[in-house]
Amino acid sequence: MTEKTLNLDTRLHDYLLDILPPESDVEARLRRRTAEYAAPQMRIGLEQARFMRVLARAMAARRVLEIGTFTGYSALAMAQALPPDGRLVTLDHDPESTAEARGFWEQAGVADRIELRLGDAAESLQALMDEHRAGTFDLAFIDADKERYHHYYECALELIRPGGVIAVDNVLWSGAVADPEDTRASTEALRAFNRRLRDDARVDVSVIPIGDGVTLATRLS
Ligand code: SAH
Ligand code: CA
Image (cartoon, rainbow, N blue to C red; front, side, top):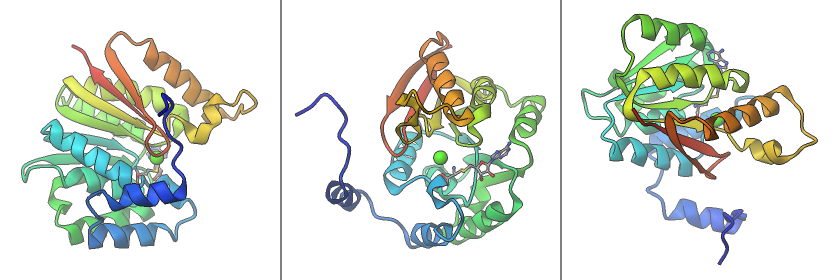
């Protein structure tokens, strides 16, 4: 036994996938289509998709906000957990990958629960604020450009209700955050973001080393 989180080798990872509820046909097709993109690794993995789905279900989430849609795999995972009158608002500025996303949501029968807003995420977040949506979301998932995570987080914190949860993706950045030699802007931004969250008295924080690392922050009041 170890206190350290296991680094999964391929055999154990295969086993982990084997004991999860399997991918639906639509999820598998979406995964294969996304593999044809230039950066398919931006899509969350199956183990994280199941994590997000259980999180949304356990919270009985009815309003979900996503920042960073891409081809729609993470949105599909969370939308599956919503009741018929639940809604997921997802933000992205890329018309191409998100057009594809819509098609898969339709095939999965969740398109009526997902509202895609195209445009710069910061502007879309301001629009939600202007529409008096502050305090109305149960769950938010931040997964767009890393340099602006802090801004997205501040907006998400206003948009979720007290007791709501913000999940933040890629916080371990393939290990780069722990490598002092790595001074890329994205790495420095994530390091600064991670430290600020640790010291943020408005939330309680956990970091789950699933996928590329996911921070969960729950709003205290
Ligand atoms: N959550 C998705 C992956 C998102 S990848 C999944 O797991 O499948 C990150 C996305 O953020 C990309 O689609 C990119 O177009 C989007 N993005 C990056 N910068 C953005 C910005 N300033 N405004 C809106 N979207 C942005
Ligand atoms: Ca991601």
